[in-house]
Image (cartoon, rainbow, N blue to C red; front, side, top):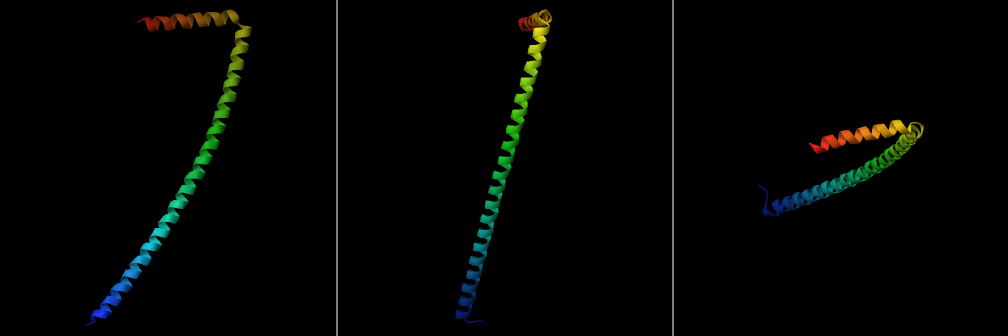
Length: 97
């Protein structure tokens, strides 16, 4: 049977081992958290770049549509006026109900 001193030594050794394992687990966790934060930043930057590109594309398409509408209005002013009057009449009828 082990003596009291041997048991205390084994207990102290076990405590050191547990402390070392806890420290290793803490380091790994911190490393994993740092990696995850870094990846999140990368993905966010990529999404921001994609969002800027989509916004620019939408802006350009809007400008193209605006130009096309302006050309159509210049070429067909009476038709445009008729369409606007019809749309106004329909909208007024719907809102009156």
